[in-house]
Amino acid sequence: MSKVPVSKLPMVGALFWTIKIVATTLGESASNFVSMAPLNLGYATCAIIFLVAFALTLTMQLKVDRFRPAVFWSVILATSIVGTAMSDFMNRTAGLGYAGGAIVLTTLLLIVLIGWRVTGQTMDVERIATTKGEVLYWTATLVSNTLGTSSGDFLSNGLDIGFRDSALLLSGAMLLILAAHYWTPISGTVLFWAAYVLTRPLGAVAENAVEKPVAQGGLGVGTTITSAALLAVLVVLVGYQLLTHRHQTRTVDTAPPTGGQHDHQPSVRG
Image (cartoon, rainbow, N blue to C red):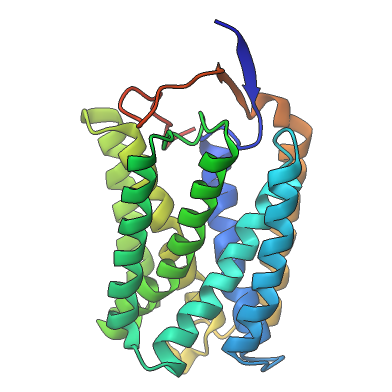
């Protein structure tokens, strides 16, 4: 059977997870920078601005014919920023509250993932080779990154666990997923999506633990310095992936199995 390069989405490994966490953490900080201090444009305005950015970057991603690290991670970053703004608008301005927002978005994510499953498109991100599959992937990403802010706020503020303890709790959950990958027969695709969703609230609470004032349980670094530092790290990591991206993609069959029942299982490790 002929082979084609699956190069629009990267391989899942240590570099993928590192950049994902940095990008989603930056998304939280950048959204706060625009919607709150220092720009104070508000959640709705921030959401509109970055919905446009998401649409533009997604259009670029759908048009490229292979994995382009700068384009791919630009979409991830855009979904993280707009997701943060939309979540804050729902929970605070619209009055849903942290628990209400988390419940609504969790339900929506389940609907998206179940709908994806029944389409017959593979849910293994290393095998996605169709535009329909890629659109489903980015839809799930946008919803999960919006959910991440709500669930992070629910843990740290709604349950009053605090930013640092919430970060430790979510880090522990990620380690359990890694252990399950090695020592249990749980589907790699299931573990991937569990980890993929958890990276967002982990980034949210970690960012808040650094950015927020000491009186609110943070270190008081502020959004400007936090955003600048995270952006610098992201640029370095994406630059490295640009140099090594030929080793960051796989080849798959031109007709991958439908429904994901027999999909190759993406790794949650490097």
